[in-house]
Length: 396
Image: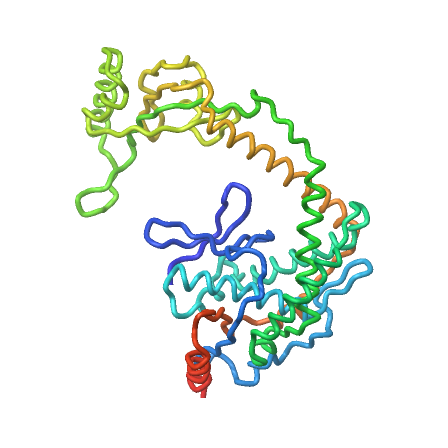
């Protein structure tokens, strides 16, 4: 199985894996996002992995649905709700993982030790779900603060979706997820409230971003790494001192060619080097500090001398004082961040006072040993029945 690691997408902690050169986000840790989006009334099949668990567990054994998973002021979260939310999101991640990776099984996914201290991906998923439930019940408790309500039409649509979910799934799958119509309806209601509350809270954020704040300058860059390269066999080899001198000579040739009238692109190409383009803001922290300083000192159309750092040689050209597309994208990013920051500030202020407490002993009883995958809606009933029978037989 490909490695699953923690990462950062610029805004959230995420769990990542890879397919070739592609990076795939499997899960947003502690956030409300899912690769598969928000919950819809999808058909789910409970599959017993061969030898993984006894047949009795197929009916959700070990879960007392009325027991307490967590509590806060004026609110109790039942194990039925916690298990259903965990298991439904398990199904989303497994389905996404299998479709992206072409894997037949996702059992190793949940046992992956993410932190090197025994914390598995299953543990991380359950912690994340409990945080989401905390968020949603907190927002529900403060609906009056923002004059938010669930309309009659929304309630009708939620009820219909819940009924459809129950109708679409087998009794075995529903028992595995501890799903009944009331539980599904409650979760869909919480999702609806969260969406409306988030919109109302974020509407308070300052969305006035000045041109100066949003501005991004466009540039072209030539980079020559001076640390290592790959040999013909694909092995990473460090440059020798003599090779580093040759690389510096190459960079100097490109610098001279530009000063004699060639474009940076053509001068780099003549020396078998490449150029890239980009844009940066005044508070950019991704560029090497020496490179950013050189760009800051340039006027539009000017090209720098060779910039030497510990790991590379650079030559940069400032293409525009304002890259319009990048600037507008940055403006929206600033607005989105302000909204997100304000939402989190309001939410965290409420949560500090609500007395939230998770019953870890009970939540630990939620198990992902039985895989939950979404059925192909185009598959025939005969095919689905056959698959379920084969899965059942494989455990005997």
